[in-house]
Length: 307
Image 1 (cartoon, helix red, strand yellow):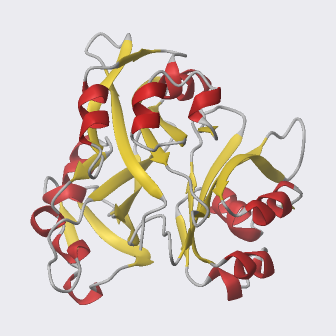
Image 2 (cartoon, rainbow, N blue to C red):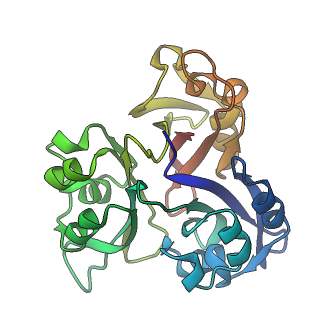
């Protein structure tokens, strides 16, 4: 099993708010690319993180060689070929930009999609852009699809304005591309709202295959009414029996995000989120936690990814 995502990064605003600086990252064995990235800074509109900051919506770059990606040489050496950036805003203030970087080969199957609704253009939500690896047929079909509010995974996330996980999408009635998903081996779907662009709706959809999964598992947690604890909402986990009933402020990876509202990374799930490390508490598991914020910057949900 090889992850569809090869590296994950968190970029944070500098103290003066003029640039994005390196916050944290997961790179596996890509040590040279990690060290190079630590020293890089992006102004608004510059590079992939800066472009997402300026646009206020997710950005997909299918080929890092054919873009304004500022780390092209190092990315090529590391075997990275494409990238996706998701900005996170609290009102008009940028909180962070999450960047996911992928490689490419003949067996690299999966999908990362950006769906958009602009009410001045269309009453439905349609595909804005996406990266599909070797799943070219699925990409062709997806570009012809549009969904009403509440229909399909993009439309369901649009209606709920919350993250949604769908298991076994190849036979789920809520996933309206069942046949195409089965043909290319897609098994699981995760949808995230990314509504920081006033007047328009943006949805990120991640579709995972068995051989090259987006991540080993996904979980969605919500803050309680007082905002002092997280409670489990939905997901797919390897050790559900070990999952805590709730997580308090500052407790481990997810409790840290509850306190700050900023994306967080752990390179040691056994210490920071042990139930995500698998039933045997396996070492080497890493995790990424991404917040969903409302327009005022209040936390609505956390999506935890285990790699």
